[in-house]
Length: 253
Image (cartoon, rainbow, N blue to C red; front, top):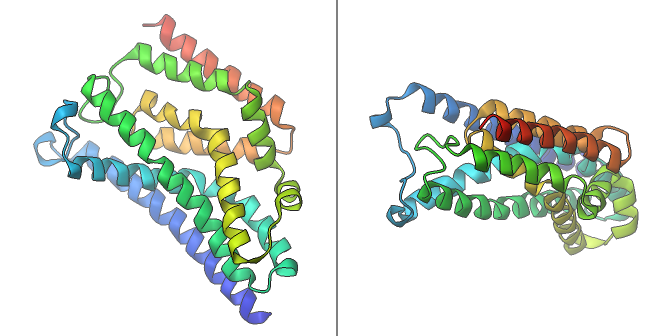
């Protein structure tokens, strides 16, 4: 059992290191964009037809790091609950934790393909600048209104309820063994994407590499999942804030 505890400790250390490395990468990249002369930095082409494979790879890598930085912290209560249950139910709890976390994070990294393709299209429409900042206030307002409206949808409420009640999720969805741990991680990842996909789009409204925007959105996601209130009222409160923000952008356009 001591070996299992040590192995779980190593996995927790890797998860914490991944969060720190991801946030550090985003911070230094955002500072680099501010500091370097425009002629010395890589920027996405403004015509969709001129994007090369390397451009897609760079943008996707950026989104993958963003997904890890923004979505791993909010999953910590679920991972902690999984550890407590897995110690009693799994013969190899450390490996099960690693697979659960890998499935969850891997799904979010795959999700990064969608904002990559959307960013490619937005650059083609010249709605994003070469610095990846929003250039279309109507689109920015629409993103906030979409994110705000989604906060009131039944799917949002159902997915957030799963994310806010780790023990309930584990008791209802428990699957034994390592394969079961991986499947549970995927299921939690799908719930989390169903909860937060619209919030991730807000980065296109505030600037894709806006470090403050990333931090604020991460805080909002964590508040939604961590604050001990029912899903509906907390989602509605955040939804009203998004709607007001979107309306403010639209009215000031």
